[in-house]
Structure formats: structure tokens, C-alpha cells
Length: 533
Ligand SMILES: *[C@@H]1O[C@H](CO)[C@@H](O)[C@H](O)[C@H]1NC(C)=O
Ligand SMILES: *[C@@H]1O[C@H](CO)[C@@H](O)[C@H](O)[C@H]1NC(C)=O
Ligand SMILES: *[C@@H]1O[C@H](CO)[C@@H](O)[C@H](O)[C@H]1NC(C)=O
Ligand SMILES: *[C@@H]1O[C@H](CO)[C@@H](O)[C@H](O)[C@H]1NC(C)=O
Ligand SMILES: *[C@@H]1O[C@H](CO)[C@@H](O)[C@H](O)[C@H]1NC(C)=O
Ligand SMILES: *[C@@H]1O[C@H](CO)[C@@H](O)[C@H](O)[C@H]1NC(C)=O
Ligand SMILES: *[C@@H]1O[C@H](CO)[C@@H](O)[C@H](O)[C@H]1NC(C)=O
Ligand SMILES: *[C@@H]1O[C@H](CO)[C@@H](O)[C@H](O)[C@H]1NC(C)=O
Ligand SMILES: *[C@@H]1O[C@H](CO)[C@@H](O)[C@H](O)[C@H]1NC(C)=O
Ligand SMILES: *[C@@H]1O[C@H](CO)[C@@H](O)[C@H](O)[C@H]1NC(C)=O
Ligand SMILES: *[C@@H]1O[C@H](CO)[C@@H](O)[C@H](O)[C@H]1NC(C)=O
Ligand SMILES: *[C@@H]1O[C@H](CO)[C@@H](O)[C@H](O)[C@H]1NC(C)=O
Image 1 (tube, rainbow, N blue to C red):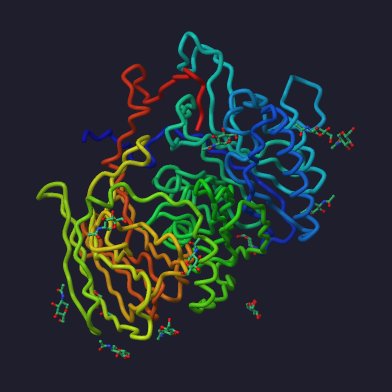
Image 2 (cartoon, rainbow, N blue to C red):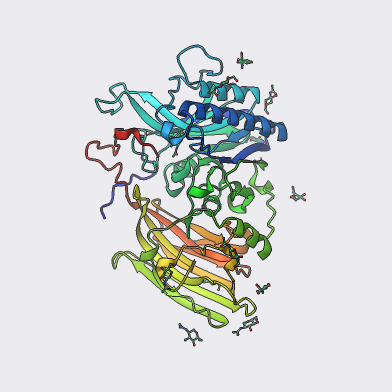
């Protein structure tokens, strides 16, 4: 596997934009995120679907404003304005001077009506509105376009301010394949200021990377991250709410996640995560639907008031049962994980060290301590087999991207074969839960580096993470080079699917779609078929 040179996160060309917003109360802000039902009306022309979705957006802004009269911010999910098949047709140009241009009702230029309508809605409802759409930019020779091209296409998020102009533009950096769309030549790093706090923007696949998140958090000190997404959940480490909580916790940044909802294809999961204090509200809908989540977020993290109600097994089971038909991917690298079976024939403690690496120099050893008790009244039915796993290698993300991963975990599997890990029994009501984990302690040593991060990954059968109170997450420097990471279970748990450490190593990343010799910047301007994803 050949790697690509990864620049340090702060060595890229960057456009810094600082925008001042004026908000209702300086000590908190009111935000709406949502689960948004993907419009599957594929028999209509793409332009009509876009129009319907725009009206739906405007109605949601109105509804949110009714519930919270001093609403500051509405975040819409990724990819929910235009249908996929109409992405090129519905792609829209932004005014060159977008920061000073008011699109609402403008007769100048020939700008897309949906952008005008959303600009009007931000003004009418006096709230900042964030949307994702496909942006096109006219090729002007200096943009690295191929001769045959008229436009470059970007996956773009914009923020409409209450005066109707565009306060911020973020062109997605880490494209998920998305052949036909370009990575911008300069990284957009808009920072929104509101009261005394700061907001950055990233979208979907960006959550697996240091760029732009580290630039925004470590260099620019943003305290809140706006995160529109259309996330396809993956077992055992990367379902939507699981990854949102673990990212917010490790980065210690408020995450405002607004997700597209389409359970049959694995999309869903949204919420407001108060940095390392856990979510104040979150949800993943079992049926495709739209649900607003509106909360007041204090600017001072000392005021974060998260209620830590630990759900009982009945609540977990009820939610889990409703999610039987929720499609989920399985980590394609799972079969290459090194595994030791957890012996669940007796009560008591166990200790194991599981190591995995590509070669002798690059080995990750995971230390597992567990204490289990068996529930003898819970015997009938299918019970998960638990594997203690380690992985240090490169995985594929649906073939469109390859990423370095370093993982330790206790994971639920159908049977003794590692190939069955990350799969669920198809009928939740046939599952029994004889194993109660009283204690789990997992420790691994990782390299201290700006090119890596590790996150605490936990998952219940309800496709929700454990509450923050139920586990402890630590990092301690062993020496200059080594960081010891440790996750411990604090409360007994019987509905466990995943408990561990998910790490990324960007130095081993590799992008087949964009590593193309035609274009040394790593961009492929291939619009053949104009297929977008
Ligand atoms: C718009 O919201 C701002 C901040 O919440 C507030 O100061 C202002 O009075 C509002 N304007 C209108 C017209 O309601
Ligand atoms: C905002 O910051 C300014 C200057 O640092 C400070 O004087 C003011 O009290 C802060 N306001 C709030 C609500 O934190
Ligand atoms: C952002 O929205 C546009 C328009 O719906 C879509 O083409 C694009 O794919 C979206 N981004 C992603 C990553 O899906
Ligand atoms: C935009 O035009 C519509 C229709 O004429 C009007 O109702 C609305 O008030 C206008 N909005 C602004 C901000 O001028
Ligand atoms: C924009 O708003 C106007 C007036 O409400 C409506 O007739 C039109 O269909 C909308 N267009 C889009 C693309 O949302
Ligand atoms: C925290 O929230 C709880 C429950 O919502 C409420 O009873 C309590 O007063 C809040 N505390 C603070 C300091 O806001
Ligand atoms: C599990 O532990 C029991 C009791 O220590 C032992 O008898 C049994 O052989 C173990 N099973 C396996 C598969 O190691
Ligand atoms: C394990 O412990 C539980 C609870 O303490 C007890 O009910 C059960 O009988 C024990 N099982 C075995 C196999 O020792
Ligand atoms: C053991 O399983 C039974 C049947 O599922 C359940 O009612 C009981 O609450 C479980 N006990 C514990 C300690 O989890
Ligand atoms: C484990 O489960 C998988 C998936 O259902 C199945 O294909 C495989 O045959 C099973 N293996 C064993 C050893 O039972
Ligand atoms: C799931 O299992 C339960 C209990 O065995 C059964 O009643 C139900 O019909 C099954 N559901 C499906 C969809 O197979
Ligand atoms: C968990 O494991 C780590 C590393 O082995 C150890 O330092 C720590 O004391 C353990 N925690 C508990 C509660 O046993």
C-alpha cells in the first residue's frame, strides 16, 4: 500500500474569514439541528424536487422559529436539497462578492432561485441558516480546469446571515470519492463569531480527518462545530451517534450535527453534543422522517447542564427493536482484525493482550481486563459472542478512500468467526443477553502525533453510545513519543455491541479517486457520466 505525503494540518493554503454575528443573548445561543427525511420523489424533474425541498426548508425554519422565538441558528443536513441525479443540473453559482451581496429578491446576475429563497428566509425569520448544495464555479483558466470543462464543482456549505448575505462558505475538503467534484485549491476555514463564542464548519466524511477540524480547533480555537451530514452508519465503530459523541468528547467542542434520514440506506443520526459532557439531545429515526431538535447552548462550558440519565434495559430494547431494519455497513477490515475470544462460560475476570500490525515496526498491542457475570435466567435465543480485537492497518472506505486505522475493542459477533463481527442478529426479539460486563479496562499505546487521533467508541444495541457517565476516557503521555490511551466501563452493562478505542493515522491515507497523475494537486476533474455521490 503506497501512502501519500500528508501535509501537517497547519501547512496548507488557507483562507481565514472572520465573521461577526450578533445574537440574542451573549451568554448562550439557540440552535436547531434536525433529522431530515431524504426526498425520494424520483419521478419528478430534479428542479421540482429542489423547489419542494426548498419550501420544506423554509417551512422548517418557520416551525423552529415558532418553538424558539430567539432562534440564532438552523443547520440543515448534507445533500438534502437536490436529488443525487440532479446534482449537476441544480448546481448553483455564488456571487463573487457573496459576503456583501444580498441574494433575496435580487434581480442582478442570474442566481438560483433556491438560494434567493433561503436568503429571504434567513432575513424573514431573523436567523442564520446553514445549507449544503453543489456549487459550480465558472472556469477561468487559472483554476486548473481541463480544456473541456466549463465549470468546477464543489460540495459546499454556506451560512446565510440575518441580513440575507452569505456569512461563510466552506467547500468540503475530504470528498467521499465524489468523482466530478473538486477539492478546493485553498482550504476554506470560515470562523463565525457569535456573542463570545466561535463556530467552525465541517461536513460528513471530514469527521475522520485532522483537516479541517484541527485547524479550526487547535489553531483558531473554535468552540462549536457546525456539522451537516449524510452519514451511513457502520458497525462496530462508526455508527452516527457513536461517532458524534466520541468526536465531541475527544475534541472537547460542541458538535451541532444535522443528519439526512434514510434508514433503508443507513443514513440517520443527529444531535447536539456538549463537548466532553455528552449530548443534550440526539436521535436516530427508525423510519425516514423529519424531526427538529432545538436547544439553548451556553457559551461558557461551565454552564453545560447535561442530564445523565442511564437508560434501563427495557428502554434500550425498545429502541433497538425498532431499528432491526436500519441498514448498517460492516467495517470491511474486521476480518483482518486480530482476535481473542472472550470466555463467557464462567463468572469472573480475565486478562488478555492482543497485538496486530502490518510489520514488526508498526504493532499495536491492546490490553484487556474484563469482569463478567452470567445471567442464568437469560439463556434462550441468540446470544452475541464477544471478541477482543486489535487492528493496526489500512482500511477501505467503500473503495473510494483508504485510511490508516488503529483500534482496540470488545465487539459483539454472531459466532466464533471474526468474519461475523459487526453483524447483528436480524430479529431483535430473538436475542438474549446472558453476559453482563461489570468491568472492562482497555489500554493501548499510540504515537503522539498531529497526524493521529484516538476516540472512545461505545455502542449499545439501541445504536446509541453509552452515556458519558458510564465510561472513563483518558490519555497520558508515557514519554515524548508515546501516548497511553485508556477506556474503562464504570457501570454494569448487558446490551453492549462495542466498547473500545478507535484511532486514525492520516500518514497512511491513500485516495485512489484523487491520486491521479493527470493532476499533481490530487484532483480529478472527471465529469464523464456526471455521476455524483
Ligand atoms: C433579530 O435578532 C437579533 C438577535 O437575536 C435581535 O437583536 C433583533 O432585535 C432581531 N430583529 C428583529 C427584527 O426581530
Ligand atoms: C465576553 O468577552 C468580553 C471580553 O473578553 C467580556 O468582557 C464579557 O464579559 C464576555 N461576556 C460574556 C457573556 O461572557
Ligand atoms: C451536498 O449537497 C449537494 C446537493 O444536494 C450534493 O450534490 C452533495 O453530494 C452534497 N454533499 C455530499 C457529500 O453528499
Ligand atoms: C422579497 O419579495 C417578496 C415578494 O415580493 C416580498 O414579500 C418580500 O418582503 C421581499 N423580501 C425582502 C427581504 O425584501
Ligand atoms: C421561491 O419562493 C417563491 C415564492 O414563495 C415560490 O413561488 C418559488 O417556488 C420558490 N422557489 C424555490 C426554488 O424554492
Ligand atoms: C439543569 O437541568 C436540570 C434539569 O433540566 C434543572 O433542574 C436544573 O435546574 C439545571 N441546572 C442549572 C444550573 O441550570
Ligand atoms: C473457559 O473457562 C473455563 C473455566 O476456566 C475453562 O474450563 C474452559 O476451558 C475455557 N474455555 C475456553 C474455550 O478457553
Ligand atoms: C454468576 O454470578 C451470578 C450473579 O452473581 C449468579 O447468579 C450465577 O449463578 C453465577 N454463574 C456461574 C456460572 O457461576
Ligand atoms: C437477567 O435476565 C432476565 C431475563 O432476560 C432479566 O429479566 C434480568 O433483569 C436479568 N438480570 C440482570 C442482572 O441483568
Ligand atoms: C458465523 O456466522 C456467519 C454469518 O452468519 C456464518 O456465515 C458462518 O458460517 C458462521 N460460522 C460459524 C463457525 O458458525
Ligand atoms: C421475530 O421473532 C419473534 C419471536 O420469535 C417472532 O414472533 C417474530 O415473528 C419474528 N419477526 C420476524 C420479522 O421474523
Ligand atoms: C486499567 O488498565 C491500566 C493499564 O493496564 C491500569 O493502569 C489501570 O490501573 C487499570 N484500571 C483499573 C481500574 O484497574
